Image (tube, rainbow, N blue to C red; front, side, top):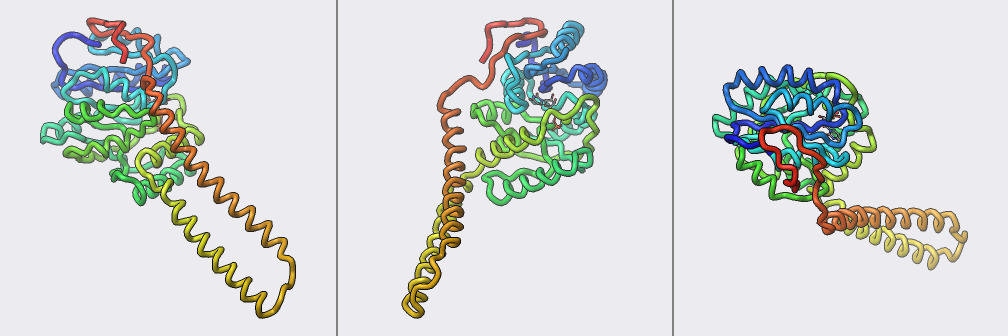
Length: 322
Ligand code: UDP
Ligand code: MG
């Protein structure tokens, strides 16, 4: 998107209805980066904002040649917005951060230090989740425990999207075009020399979190299903256990009938077991459905996102959407 020499650092910042945060963000970001003494560009990805975020970005990009913005054609979600930003980043390293100032720009200097030491995947490690509501932090913990037990990837505790990735790591990520994206898993999957940098999460500068409970649950399912096939396989064992139970029950009833003759008709047992086993079958079908739906989504091969407009940067190429 930008012409000119390759910058050292590209910032990728997903933006969804953050009009009141953009100016405060930039006011802290630019000095923090200039202190690092490296050249940089910032790519804001407007993820279909409905407020004045895009107007604010237009003004910011007009005033600062190192800023540019991509406006996606609708809201594609944070994971895809980040992918779009990575596609357009040119830097020798990329820093991903939120637009709501929960990720302090001052920490980037420490990321760069680690990068200079040779680390290619430097992640911010939040020291507490005190700013999150109770229910959310409970569910978050549950989710990470599940991934930890059953997932194919090891997620470092407290790591999120706030991180620096070396060009080599970014190029590895770019090869993964899956639609049901779970960035945290992808960041862990690519490997490379990694290290955490602890930081304290600030409260959101303005507005509120874009992730309500429903969205978080979908996100967690995406994460679990993209990085584990346990939900599919567990039914073999559930089925096996239930069959063994049913056989023993049959044996028991057979023996009892032989010894004591037929007694009550057993209507309640029948109703309960039919209901229970149809439930189990429907759950396992549902899990299959979740995976089939995901296969369907991937197989359609639609583009990950569509760019409606590119703003700023010295040379703007309007036809270059991937
Ligand atoms: N975001 C986005 N698309 C979305 C939702 C969020 O680009 O559909 C951006 C949002 O503007 C912010 C970042 O992702 O820069 C993190 O969002 P938020 O602060 O709502 O999440 P939380 O901090 O609560 O996890
Ligand atoms: Mg936030």
